Length: 137
Image 1 (cartoon, one colour):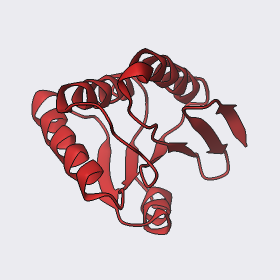
Image 2 (cartoon, rainbow, N blue to C red; image 1 turned 45 degrees about the horizontal axis):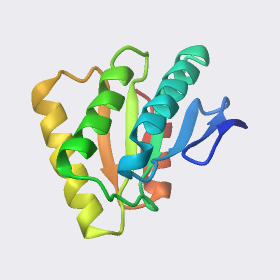
Image 3 (tube, helix red, strand yellow; image 1 turned 180 degrees about the vertical axis):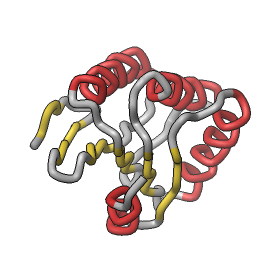
Image 4 (cartoon, rainbow, N blue to C red; image 1 turned 60 degrees about the horizontal axis):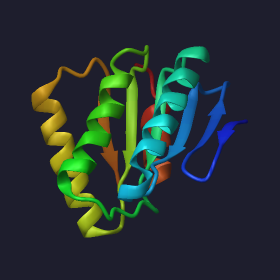
């Protein structure tokens, strides 16, 4: 069921599997404050529904901001998720080498700068990500 949908993110939750699917937003400098507001909505929704499994789909993400801004958004999301009861986060990789390179740098930075209380895995396909998320924690 779709719990939230705007021009930046769509939150699709399946209570039977306890998996929330989120399309990772495009990162443009003029949208950064709106993206943070959308992340706040995501985090509030994760808390409200007590979501344990999250799928972040980056397959269509476009990044037109610098490394600093991209890292800031990724860190903001990760820090927010550490305050929830999420146990597993699956990220579906982008087909864009540039987007993927930026994402991997951000993930390395986050894993060094903060202790993540959830498992984080990258996948090349949504099917593999959903299979991993559906497994027992």
